[in-house]
Picture 1 (cartoon, rainbow, N blue to C red):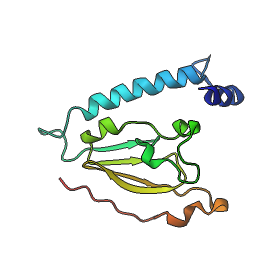
Picture 2: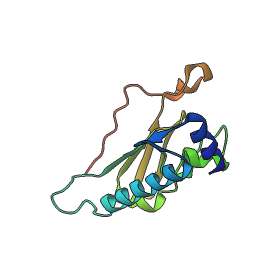
Picture 3: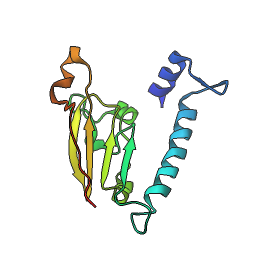
Length: 136
């Protein structure tokens, strides 16, 4: 929270005329997670969906932590701990990180196909034409 507070103050972020500080960002994140939990909790039964795919900006698991930095306090700025929600999706796509991942948590496949920064060599594993199939 201290790092986030510093960053938000530095950026002078506002939302609807109010400071968009670390507390406000956390509150919005919790509201979004509640919504996502409700949606994923509905399951795939019935005529609603053939398969559920979750797409989020932040990673849903610490398994997506950038291996160059590992798990440290700043990791919370990139990865959430949403593994408890994963059973509601067959595939979970995420961004925000600059490295690539393809792993499973239970029956959910998690993919991050980030391009990253060329100057840091991060696009080496990027697959610009990747096709991901979700089978029902």
